Length: 485
Image (cartoon, rainbow, N blue to C red):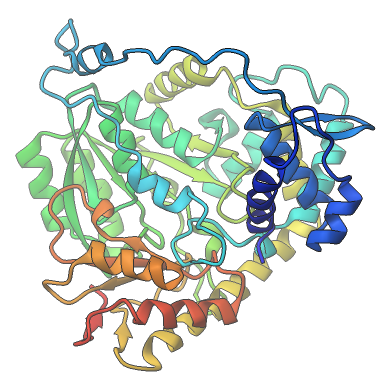
């Protein structure tokens, strides 16, 4: 069982137990709770901390936990209806006129929200904790904390050694001066879109694409314009048409193991994407999120688009989060030319800098012997899990056949039969005990068909993957025929 599920279950039990005590009454000791519920001391500590945050208990170091006093005064219910007018008002300067200001994070929250206890997580966006280098990260953070100056203010662009490391990963000709260290990939994408497009402008996006990127664009007041993707990546003939029709000056893409389809941009289209953007006077934002999630049966991945771009067309985004931990939010922006100064200015205004201890810990981690071992382990484990999930999908009716089996990343993309109620399948799967991601949030406009995205990196292991697929099958239409697409 996941540690977080144990904490949630214990907290639920303790909420009921607390009600039996008078305000100020002492709860059983941590040792008693460990023995009674057969959980670890860490689980007890985290459950009590959760209840303390909810105001139900008060913890006193060395004395124990007590039921909190009853609130003395009930706050008056306020009237916040005025905010609807304020939040929907147009930009007084006219810059965002006609652009909806509502921010929809629902597509992102699908992969961030923890499923209820007992539900298998086939909708996650991160590796299961057993695949994360927790011991190596803990050791790296401990070493980093002892470095001289580890808690002082870092350079706003990032530590020079870390910028050098990221630069080498982009290309042999990329320099540290062309790198900005960011607080993960999401932050880097936000900075890039704010730098490259004014509110109200169109931005070209792959279709389907990562919902977090669509959310960033809409939150910035931009208009996503979808360009279809096939197994060879974005369709470049439609990309050229989209630039001409929309007047867009930005195209956001994931050339390597695209989320959600797993597509890899073909060699022919790689050069064409940069050429088309250059002819349109536009930037390409390259989200290289999955480069360190290559499977063991894949050949050497193509270099980033930025590696063969002397003209500064490509703004490169990368992150270490996916192959390490959701909480190691360290990434990089690579750019050349005047755009670099604009990216730097926006990042400084938004964040000042990435905390130095986190940068120092990242340097310790990627310089340790544990780093190449982590990459090899993830490559082998993801390949094994991919084979297990595809085998489970094909094992019994209705047969579920992805059209594309990726050689990297941690997702499979399934097309449901035309006419299938996608939301009903997702809800039925959750009732059956498995969480899957609906396809609708991955499309910037009306989707061509219902889809599901399945994660094989988030479950606890092979047995959970197989059981998750079995539970999913119970929620599918009886006629089957589910394919990729």
